[in-house]
Image (cartoon, rainbow, N blue to C red; front, side):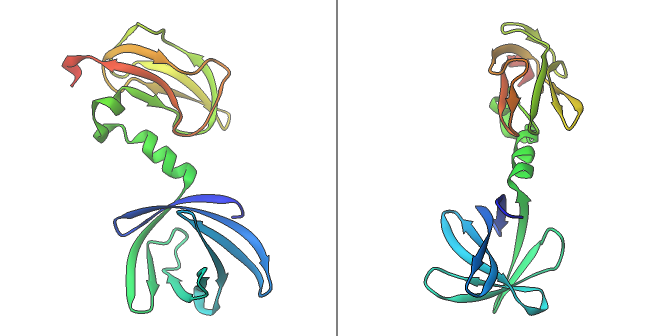
Length: 180
């Protein structure tokens, strides 16, 4: 888990976290940076973890024991949590085109890190909903990216052979009025 980034939702609040392995006077620990604030975290008996804050306060946190925890407990309080790797969060954001309105529907983003294999459309070209626009190769599989709505290809921001990250913008489509 060293050097891994996460997106964490605690109740209704979103946080960005990074976990790094460190060596401390008390033995191996993890340094966790949450929204820029640094904490030292060590495993404790019974599946709990001890969080040492910068001000020296120690807090015992117990997670629900699942591979991806859904709740956390500190003395006197329990909260629902959702933990995703930064990559999974970017993928979820890229795939959440449906409820995000016309602007997001007109943006085609890479759902995962990969390489642009082929661009199937040209700027200025009209496309129907579901038209294949770009092919991304990831993990030795080709993935077609489709137009979420009918419109005109406004801008292509990648080229064949480019390496792309999860959530990276590939092209924009000006959505046709009748598609709204």
